[in-house]
Length: 276
Image (tube, rainbow, N blue to C red; front, side, top):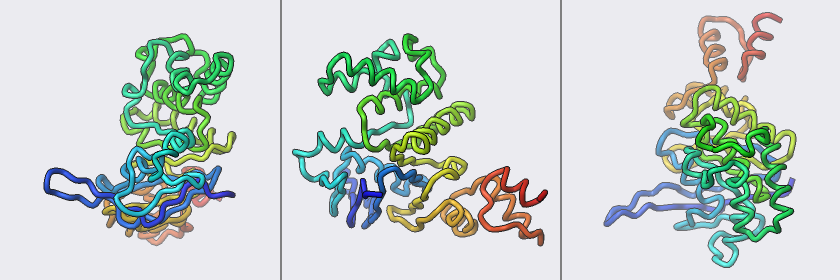
């Protein structure tokens, strides 16, 4: 698949008065169209800072970020870059701007100058994509956290981006809300072919990814499939990270001398291993 996003020796420094904090150090990654990539890392690892570079909310201190061949350093291309990559953040309340759901989803296309009949279609298609069409005339503040986050995702989808970046979108949600949002994210990628970059500290959310990028102290320290990454239990724990529950159980069973294959991630896989 064609490369959608590429970073080349990306570095970023936070400057506060006379202090400089290095947040990213020589990040070199590429993400293909249609790929589902999860970025994990301990607090302060740089994963959210990296996410904000992917639609030019942050600009590199050194190095380059390319989006569909456009360099985020080029001010003339920033508008086009931000149309290609949509962002969803932790708190959905900070992203909802209207008192009616369908008006909120229409906000972005209206600001792009999209014709009214096209806006109506985009709003309907976007709400269908996140399974929220039946709430189109509801007030967002009456919805649950998971529903609000799905409306926020619909608002991004209405802009017709090539890629959606989600920066810990389930961090403030209960388990049901997390499941609703994750089901939506996975469906967007698997059924509709949307490129998804998902930043999270919930390891269970990384199981369905095509690829996981592990960050620590502003650097990419590991990269690979979920089975490859989560088979390295000790290495992840040294980085202050957890592993999916079934992977933890498999690790404990192996320490007790019970043979369990490497890379068990889900309950179904564990059942098949123990009760073939």
